[in-house]
Amino acid sequence: MNTPALPGRQRIMAALFLIGCLALGVLFCKLEYNPSFGARIDFTRYHYPTIEQFRTLDFFVFLREMNTASGPLYYALMGTTPMGPDSVRISTLLLHVMSTGLVWWLGYRRLGATAWPWLLASAFYFSPFQLGPALWGHPETLATLLIFLALWLHTQGFVATASVLSALSVSSRQTAIAILGGLGLWDLQQGRFKNLALKMAVAGVMLVALIHHWHGLTPPKFQDHMAISGRTFLASFAMMGLALFNWNMRPARASWGTLLRYWLILLPICLIVYNGSIHFDRGGFIFSILDKMDAKQWGWCLSSPLILSLTLTLCVPSLREDPMTTLTLLGLSATLAISNVFYIKYVDFYIWPLALSIFAFALDQPAKLVNMTKSLIAWTVVNLTLVSLRY
Image 1: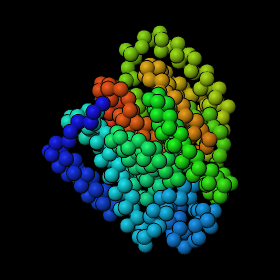
Image 2: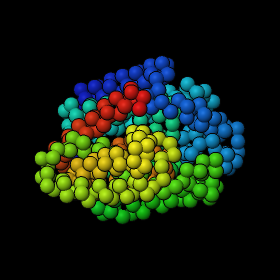
Image 3: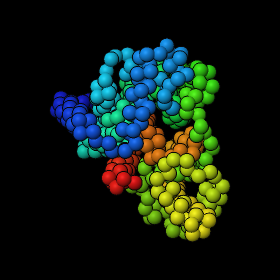
Image 4: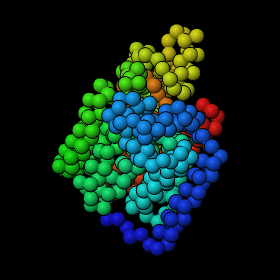
């Protein structure tokens, strides 16, 4: 579809909105606001020391000695200047504000001068698992910006440049390769085979080079949590479906009999896969708590598979209507399932690029996009509630 012209009034409002986001973020930095809790610890223990490593070590030595599980691009970007911790945090916040502006623009492109683009951008900005990493200097903020910039460039006709830029995200956060897989499905569907090949070739070369130096998918110090986990897969798939489709989870969208049949199929699958998989090593939030309670009562996990099967059942009607998103969610969940470490921030890292790719590439379906916006707003509100309760 054609991009609507951006009137002067909208430009001014967008500029003021982003200035407000930046000012509020700077205040949060000064107050040391820590919405995702572990974000501060990771910055002081891993991310800033890795930036200092980049400044003091030969590059290839740095690659082998990196004190992080992430790729080198973010640390190289921040380490090229003598910025201290506070300046690094402000710089990363600025990347987040830029991403927020791109979220607003992609929403405006499809939904016009309504309240929805503003609510969509606000939901992204205040998401604790986007804002927290931004306030505390995490590399996924850069990876997210690169994906959003690529989506924006694509809508402006710079398709090859967008492909290269999106591929660069894997050098900041290796798991972004799953996001590229989702974007590749759009390329296949819309016949952009050359750009798909370019995107995957650039990403592949970078990943192969990193794997060559690391002898694995992460730096040597962080190769002890690779274990295929069905629990992580089920939790990831259910949480991502919940995030995208919670506004459509109304039993009226399918008959009770149909939903019951879906549940009777999914429940035994979830019970078998969940109980046949290794426990969450870290994270797992509510599932870890329920698993411990079930272990004392029954010796078998029942509560978590029940919740996951019910959630997936309510997602089935939406997933059946959108096979492109379903395939992408399966790929994203499979990527997360290579580890038995599970936090909501890992899920949130995938949800927003997936949602924004739908805004960029899906056919003109304003009602669907409005419902997705409502779902994302609800997802952010729930996550803010969880972190306020110190889940």
